[in-house]
Each structure stands twice: as C-alpha cells, then as structure tokens.
Image (cartoon, rainbow, N blue to C red; front, side, top):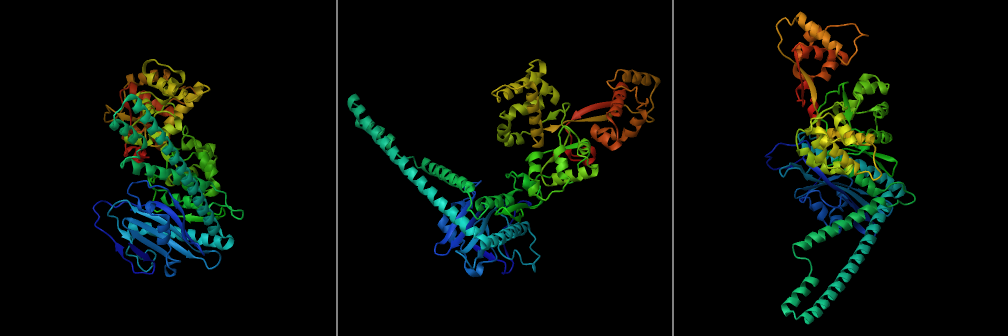
Length: 611
C-alpha cells in the first residue's frame, strides 16, 4: 500500500505500457463517506454503488465497513490536504477534514478509481504541487481532477457542518437507518431459516412413514432425508450468499436515498454523494448522462443541502460522444439519444445554458432541418448553428440528416444491435431485431413502412411492416389508431438513428457520358421539354430556365461523393431546380442517381456517417 500527500516530492509508480494510452486511464469505481464522531469512533456512513460493475473491482466493495472506517481515519498531520492511497490496482483519492467544534471530529470523502489497463501509470505523490510540471501524463491529470472536485465538495460540506451540523446529523441518520434495517433483515432471515428447518423436518418424518409402508430400504430412506435437509452445495452456497447480500444492500440503499432529511436540513447527503459519483464518471462509456449534466459544461453541478452549488469535474477529459468538431450545417438536424428536448428545457434552471437555447430546444424537430427550425425559433441562422454545435459538443445530441417519410435507412453493423436491445425493448416493448430488419432490409422508405404497419397491409414487400404493426398493437390494451402506430414507427426510426444503430441512405448524382464541351442536341432539348410537361412540379409561375448551365456549373461535384442535400446547401438550389436537373440528366443520359450509405469523405468531409 502506498500513501501520498501533496507536500511530498513528485514520483510515480509505473510499469511498462504495452498498448496505447486512452484519454482517461482510470474509471470511477465508487464514492464513500467516513465520519468520526466524538465518543463513537470512526464509522462508514455511506458507500455507493453497492456492487462492482466488473468482477475484478472487489477491493472497494469487499472491504468491511469497520476496516474501511479504520483505514480512512487518518492522523491529524494527514488531514486538510489531498491524500492518494494505492492498494493493489485500486487508487483511493480522499480528503479528511477536521472539525474543531460540535460532535463531529472528522469526516473523509473517498473516491475509488480503477485503471482501465493493468499497466496504467499511477501517480502516488505531488499531484497538486505547482512547482512540478513534468508529470503531465493522463494518469496524473485524471487524479488531479478528482482531487480538485473532492476539495470543492469538502469545502462546502465543512461550511454546512459549521452552519447547521449537516454532515454529523445526516451521517448519524444514515448509520442508524442502516443498523435498523440490517437488524430487521437478519431477523427476517432467521425466521425464514427456522421455517425451512421445520419444513425439512416434516418432509423427513413423512418420508420415514412412506418408506415403512412401502418397504423402502434404509439407503433410500437416508437419501430422501438428505435431500430434504441438506444445505446448498459448495458451488451454489457462495453464489446464493452473494445474491442475498446484494439484495440486502440494494434495499438499504433505496431507503437511504428516499429518507427525509432532518427539519433544519433541505437536502439528502446520500443522494448528493450519488450525484457526485455520477458527475465524476459521466464520461465513462457505461454511464448515461442526465439532462442537467449534459447542459452544464465540462463538469456537473451538485447542490449541497439544495442551495450551495458545487462544480464536479469528470475524471475523464473530453467528450466520448462528440465525433466531429465541425459546425452542423443548415440542411442537417439534431437527434437526442440521452434526453429529450423537453427534459433539457426543464433542466435549464439547474445549468448555465445560453438564454436562447430554450427557444431552439422548444422547436427542434427531426422532421425539419436547422434552416427550418431557425425560422420557427425566430433566431438568426448563425446563432442556431452555434447553439447546435454547443449541444453536440456537450454530448446532448448528434447531427443527422432530416428524417422524413422519404428517408431510407440501412444498418451498417450488428454490434450496436445487441448493445441497445434491452434499452429499445424497454422503450417500445418490441424486439430491436424485428425493427432493424424492417427498417433496413425491406427496401422501403420510412413512409411506406409507416403506412404498411398502420394499415396491416400484407401485400408484396409490406409483409415485414405489417408484422411490425402487429407487434406494436399488442402493446396497447385499449386499441390503437393507425395514426398512433405510424407515430410509434417513426419514433422507433428516430431512436435507432440517434443511437447509431441505423443510418440514413443519401442520394447522390453522378455525371456520365460527358463530352468535352458539354453541349446538347436539339433532340435532347425536345426530350427536356417533354420531361418538364410530365413533371410533378408546375413551372408556369417561374421563368423557363434550361438546366444545361446548372449542369456545367455542378459538373465537378457530380462525382457521386456529394449528396443532393449538400449540393442544394452549397449552391443555394431549391427543390424545383434540383428536380429539373435530375429530370434533364436522366432523360439525356447525362446523370445517374445513386442511393447509398454516406462515407466519411462525402459532402466535403462532414463525417456524417460517424455522427
């Protein structure tokens, strides 16, 4: 075990690194609170979570409360400063605060970290010494961020303790509740054990009477008695004990988070420590961020006693969700995988967000592009794009093409399907495998799938869509209208797209058979006139403009790497002009229209397929 404080010389405990270094070499295991009250000694007041996410993370969770309280009750010279304890591969970042008056002698906030790789460099000293700048490794910076957050939290907890005994009263209440619940659960366990013992005795006696009447042998009678009274096997016993212990701890945790604070307090210390843990770990891959954290910048905002704000910086730097730092474009839209725009609006009073952000969130719609949303929100387009970039940077949303009834979806990989299967089933009550199969392999547009699911049409290619509609109808006991089924199907498509399970297929134009001068014959002009007359658009109200000049202007971009949406955005084309160009190009064998999955190099490197 290695202990370090900030007044020692900088040094690191390191081993040879074989693989690449990640952005954050640690992940947050949990948080704990140790208190030392006068006349009661050091006790573990709270520990969260109750079980590890990985079987290897057992030290922080396996330490008995008494031993953990004794380990993290440091002597006075080690208090009032950051302390890092390395036990095996687990790193404990803690800060003990001595209180001069009141019943509380000391409290200590502990955050446990685990290296993401066995060879991670672990800083054991000098984490906050400004005179040393040589150690700028990711490990050093991660531990420093954790210590900075703990220091802010302890400063506020010490203030609230002096003002209203916040830590001492809350911790005493938590410890007392844990003792009462454990006694009740132990008593309940003894009653169940006694009942099982009585049942086993009755089974044994009944087996003896049956064996006497039926003339069973002594060995058979002994086997029946052994089965009825035997304890779990050696392999089953530890698993059952572990499962029972988890249920007990989980029930105690739920009670601690729901407990009412004392009359003079407004907050729940246990709930606040849980928020601190999630704020430290919110950029981990397995963590689902809350709306307030998504809009709070690079750190979370925790309100101690519901009125003192504390900035908690995540252990990991950067954002794991953001894949492109470019500004979203006006023909794109925003999809929200973690929290809906309404949930983000409700959390704005808890986060430092721009004042115009609420206007944008109220008008965001996956059916509309940012250019249309900016009109509805009465905002300048530049402001809308800047706010959209802010939301993408915070990981609150992803950039996507507009999702309409004409959208065609495709599935790139099956890896994300298994990862999102449980979340999708909980959200819609339908198997994600059925939904992805319908959206990606049927060859239908989203509008055709919605109509097929709503009407139950089982003709031709709509068989899969009708199956999806029946699966959705089973989730509604009182019946469902076709319009409601269509809305559910659309929400499924948006959910899958926002979680990168499926992606929009884009339309591309490719120039073919182009001669050097690019001029056309009189026959092509006549064909163009016939195409205009048969078009769905009406050109009577606009001056006739031959698309030949537009074709020549766009010729360098008609290579199949620029989508039609990007062409309209770059060259300020309206849908009518684009339709004219496509009709003329198809009739004169000058263009081919492709529909495919976008690649990272499309649309002048927008990286849309990675969003």
